Length: 574
Ligand SMILES: C[S@@+](CC[C@H](N)C(=O)[O-])C[C@H]1O[C@@H](n2cnc3c(N)ncnc32)[C@H](O)[C@@H]1O
Image (cartoon, rainbow, N blue to C red; front, top):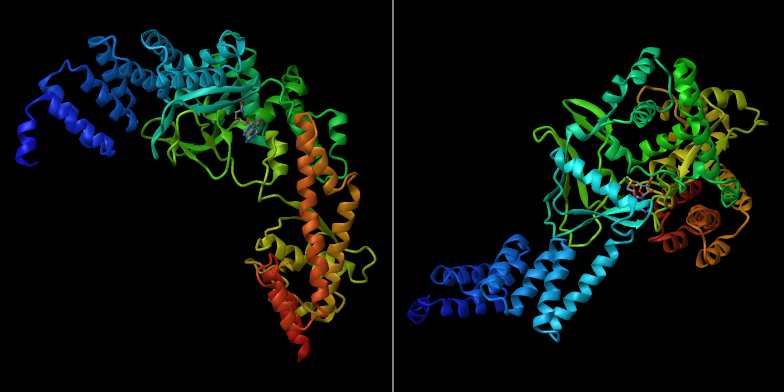
């Protein structure tokens, strides 16, 4: 600092000026430092306090901003700017109703103040978003109860707030700016329902004793725990049980027959029916071994079973790998890429969620359920992810019953059919395994089998048809021909075309109708891709090598062309 400013620095007023200069060039740390120096000289300087509040606000330090603005108002109740800053701090902290009360007082002092009026509009918007359900709605009371129960138990989530988009679709939002790497949620172990607790419960213990062979053991144990707790009027878990969704109407296993019609022709329908059968099978297995289980109706079992699979977290507690319900953490909806990360923190003794990036006030706080095909999202969570790059279509390859080498092929493959879930992303191992298997199924020249047995083995030395590389032009053309047949058969099963689905999606639909349409549309996109790809590749067998290289550059199946068509054609030249 030069001599001139040294002289100036003797008064609060001069520190205020220097603070303002720093503030105007966004040097907030220095601005705060100068305002603080001024306040050391004149602690009751309301403008210095209000200005420091403004600097704290920009640094996302809302507690400090609120404290300075409040003090400024108490020193000078007519200073409108301080009210604005106080209201803004409260708004940033998610205390919307309190912020509105401050604005209303300030507007009595200056009802034309543009900043105040603008902030009032912003607040009205926030209050509206927050009140899809009115505060007195019983669902909100249930949530208030959950929050109190968690806080009383030592949970921490000072910047999170529940929002109701509709009665049974809720999510979590930030009430205040969240910094990257900030811990946003802590739920103590005492408030987590684990698989071990479920196994130790009265009926859980009987299930363990019976040594049941269940299709989804962990889901069944946790389901059983919830079913038992729901029958105890004084369960510790009621604040949590009360907020679990009741109907799960968007889960396909609960679709009405009319809704299922919307999936006609889709292989996804088989997955839905398999899931229904699997749940029934597990339910019957338990009922047979533990007769008192039939006190729980299958409908309730199925609903809780799906609640379990759509809400639990895998974690490690005290060196034991387990799964469990983590209240509130299970309110975060899905989005990829992930914005938060979670784990059980042994030292802290609870489940924590950290922000992987900064999250602005009011934004929804999301969690990734992983990279999954829409069939898994819809089946297990009841929603569809638009623009999903992980969609798959299941192709079932089968040995030909009339193949003269059927027995030999069947014994080498160890099965007669196999399903491969293909994505448009052709670098996937599954695509080459699918082709390898088809190459074996379509193989006519069995004289090469001894060689294949040597070349295509897994790590245990067993023959793996999936490892077969392109064999000959004739075999590859047959493989593609068979693949094309499967694609055309898939397309022919639907009742609508891809274009018709697009039209349907523009209209008014229920959530389930929309999800079914999106589901089958996604499958058709994959089928269409393979339809075009196969036709193009088949043409390439009759094209000169140079020409192929030109047309294939940069296309999605370039790698496949390079490793099959080009290799085979070169071999043919010799
Ligand atoms: C772990 S819970 C999340 C909280 C849930 N929204 C609630 O109100 O209880 C998972 C469920 O949230 C819904 N969900 C999660 N992410 C979604 C998304 N991206 N789009 C639509 N629904 C979603 C689905 O119903 C899913 O089964």
